[in-house]
Length: 397
Image (tube, rainbow, N blue to C red; front, side, top):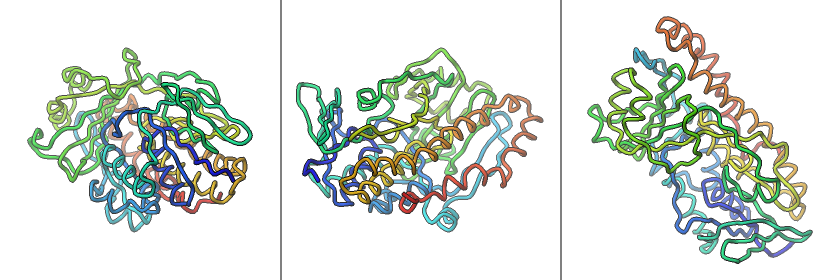
């Protein structure tokens, strides 16, 4: 086997989880990240048991839980009346039922925990200011072309560089992103700006053509807010574009006073258009493979984007460890194990978005009947049990 490292392109959550998983399997890794400094844009992320059990196996559970909020419950609320329905209990129930916790964590905190763990195993693993421009491969190795004229060589390359993946573009072609007809607002709100304090349950407010998700972060010191709206006048796919507070409030005019209180507390909203690409039938070619948003971007409505990338990292590392120098066999096992699940999650997320925005939610009486039918314990189990019980550390490869 070549002594060259495995190259991971992208030091986001998926890339760092992959690097850590490979290092723990005894493989050498080099991570190339275009940003000049490590840091994760965005705000909150939900990690259900299928992700936290992987993070436990990667040895970072204690560090993660020191920065996270362990979710006690999730609920749905009607946009106008404020009526509340419990979605499911979490807290001890998640540990008892699924063997791992469900947590809310700031993306920056999760990112820092993973980066620290990677550097603890290999101090110089992460190369910053190294933007990948292209990928070339031979029968023996892979070479990245880097901005500024540099190169990096490895025995394999893993594209974990997100929805705008340069690795995917170089190996498979860029493809075309399709606008979903939905845009999202996000904000992080300090507790002191909320007169009633931070709501500690994970909450989905459901309304016709739009919905709100909010949950606590950083030991309940801040509230993570995401509002998704069906509208086609904003189609910029960026997490860092500032919006106007009055615009996000206008998008949710007439909503219940509890939701309005949160909207009024927002000072710095950001907005982005939700874009998707057609699912890829294959993620690997030669000595290169993809993971996370680079190959299976999804809507956020099942809260599984980060979870899928973490699962990918675990399964890919297991496959490479099991197959030794036979990377083709490893990549084939990886795709066989992961493509059916990620495809199902993408479809489930699209179905959840339609459910959250159903037109029947506009009528109070129809909404009561609709929510009572769609959020029975049986329907909830049907939608979530298969998600949370999945174990990337032991699934057949």
